[in-house]
Length: 410
Ligand SMILES: NC(=O)c1ccc[n+]([C@@H]2O[C@H](COP(=O)([O-])OP(=O)(O)OC[C@H]3O[C@@H](n4cnc5c(N)ncnc54)[C@H](OP(=O)(O)O)[C@@H]3O)[C@@H](O)[C@H]2O)c1
Image (tube, rainbow, N blue to C red; front, top):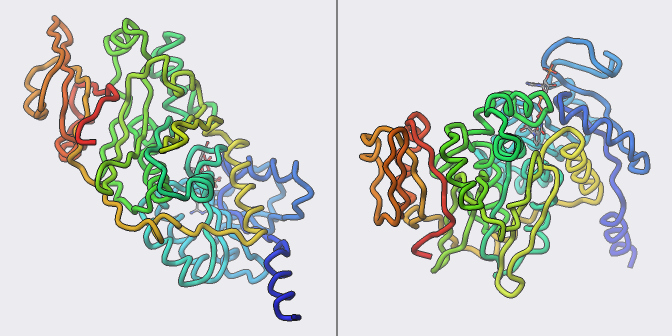
């Protein structure tokens, strides 16, 4: 059977990886360094495309400034895209896939906004696009959802998906540090994105959640249709409210299966008690709770940001490409029929100072209310769709919102 043996051998042969790298910032440098610690891989970076001419830790001859110097090089079979601009990343990744090159990317915004097209391009051009580093840094959550949780049992994926906002919350909550000081520290340590609103307003968590939703339930959701509200308006009053009850406040992304093949997803700060796995996730760490029928809850924990942890996730994808790995998007393929709905109701804490803002919030029921000289709050159930409709306005109001963890219509 010579043909069969040939096919078998090809599948089992490790493909030599010749990398063209885009970006040499926190993650690009991190990848370079972790690659040096893994000589057995026999993988090399041939060229690095960057934006600006400046002093680098590597010889200038390794760098180029025109993407085509890499994309048109037939000797380069793998593109690793680690730049900080999602539109330019989209052009690079699309061109690479069309030209038959496999790609590894860490760009959650680009992936979340173009998920359907990225899946189609892979199928059409018979190439692989891997992006483990795009969600939760070093934690192998995407491949686990794709390979291990590939059945009907999965009920929800809930987690602290953003390292820098978690770092800020840890410092503000545990060390009584001012918010602005904690943010500056997160930026100096390389955890925060170039634009901090990306982290603290919950966009980074949102894009990651969109990616996890595809690999959990096979649904490509438009990020514009999903509620993301972050931590930038948190006040001492909110922190004390949580402290008095023995809770912490964490920025949490959640996708959950509801009845009748519906799913819901949102990103919101949440009051978290000691009984929850994510209570003890601190600093730049991420933690993901995967809940399912039969196995109940499982918890994945690890570093969600920083050059080396993220670089190690990129390295793992590069190795996987060497073994011809590709996502099969199994949930989209054979589960079929899951639908994102916006009319689930969740219980929120709404802190405000001017009662005029209450006109935006159509509470279905209110279980607790407090009126004080400076700040007041309401706790009650509200439909997600009501908050999604005003998500741009929410960021501009002098309020803070947090989920209590209770929900209806499930
Ligand atoms: N930092 C983290 O912990 C982390 C974690 C997970 C995922 N990520 C993702 O990883 C990616 C990279 O993040 P980072 O933190 O490494 O960013 P970064 O430190 O700001 O570095 C960005 C790099 O991209 C280069 N660049 C920008 N536009 C380019 C273009 N059009 N062509 C070629 N190079 C270009 C820059 O070039 P110059 O050096 O010339 O300016 C720089 O080297 C982002 O998608 C981010 O969301 C980051």
